[in-house]
Image 1 (tube, one colour):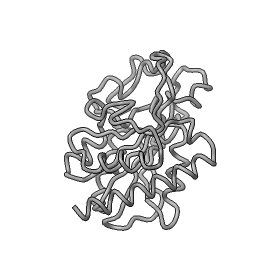
Image 2 (cartoon, rainbow, N blue to C red):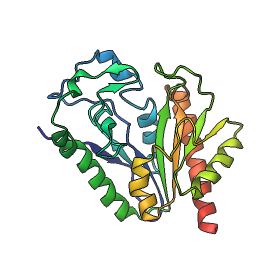
Image 3 (cartoon, one colour):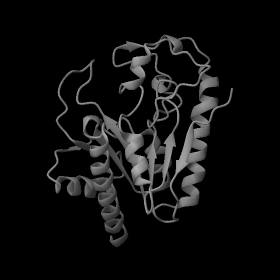
Image 4 (tube, rainbow, N blue to C red):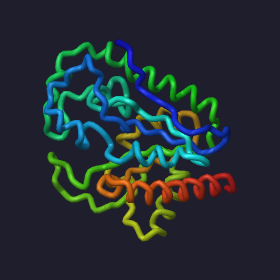
Length: 241
């Protein structure tokens, strides 16, 4: 059974800002049995909570078009390299994923991972974006590492910090506690932007929003507006540099 692992929303403007969300969906195709409690599909191990709704607001006219994943990260983690064991996770935050143990990994990659990244590459070639926004959300704490994560938003980057340094400063101007390569470091986990942005010299702003802030509609509206404002300011600053 074939099932597309991505969708596009919004209208692209060549040379504008675009958004990428690798973990926007908790969908599991009907022919895949992960062997887990269905309730886990509503938790952070399956989806970046709030991201899809924020992206949909950002993509509204005259917005920021988006390339969104349409399958759960538990089916195939599109924000991992193909040779990373976690690309098809057998465990996640202390939960065993029985349906991923002993499967044909090549078949799963061929079905979901490669089409997603192939479509993303073509879309970005067409867009020639001034800035890529990569959007994720993070949980206030992990079951496997219960230490509190106090940041409201984090900005991640690997080698290219052009947009990140502007983004950190601009979010701080809203009075937010901003993580500089927190709660994850882009030097360790930056697969999609390494491939489609850094390898191509494209500036990008990788944003991690704490999920409790965008779990409901009011927060989603606030953060969509704030992200759009920051992204446009960053793009302008980069153009002026």
